[in-house]
Image 1 (spheres, rainbow, N blue to C red):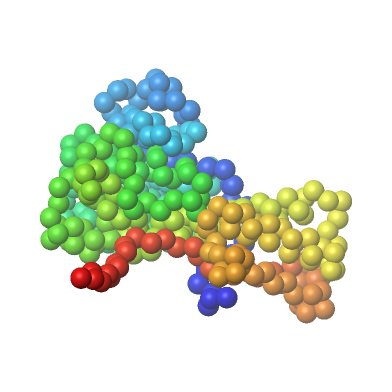
Image 2: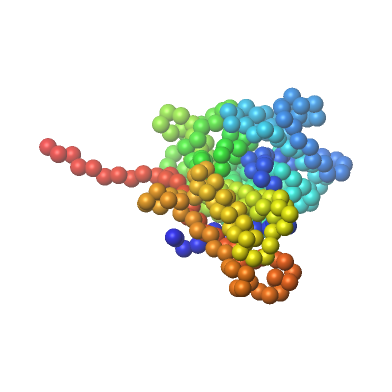
Length: 327
């Protein structure tokens, strides 16, 4: 097994929503009390946000994609986007978008998300200054796109966020309604240097130039980690809640271990967990027996003895090969 590089705190008391791990929410500034509403179709959303508004444009880019999510949510805020993000953080969304693309709101949202260990923010910028202001922010995806009227952030989230977590890396992917840019090596290197993503023409087609967050970590890695957290919390919660009693002994601990293993096996099947040379999944689960658990925890009926680790499947984003030509 590799050294542990994934540390996830499992919170069974308030499990993360298992559904909605690809669902976007569009935050928009609007007078009045903060509100949150979900829409299953673009036409339903257009009843509240007219064609041509910032929200409708972002939603339109999402619903246009082949792998669009089941719903798009819209959350409003009067002045402070962070207040609204905190208020609706527990709702069933995973990717936040900023409707107005204003640099100040984007930075505020990225600052909020930087302190979280679950969910993501995707923003679109069109200047070097705005891009650099967001560099290094954790869990924020920066899309550099300068073509007016197009929403690369919404299109990418709409097409890639809802696909089976672990099955897709974001680099190389083509999107509907987005125009590829012809960038030279210097321009690409500048965007890469800020860990941003452009939509470029390569091999005769438009595609995403990378698949990372503003801090250099990869989207599919952290999305997979979030999936493991949500699925394991729900699996353990289901185990505890659907039996007359889970005893604090080998039987109950074994049930928790089985729940943890179920999640990791699902993660392996989905492509989150790596495969070892022999074809086995690269994960392990450890549970402490009852006599090794702190007596105070036993008195409080809190089991803290479960732990796990897994190797990320990762992805290949570049290939460099050498060859010999024989005469």
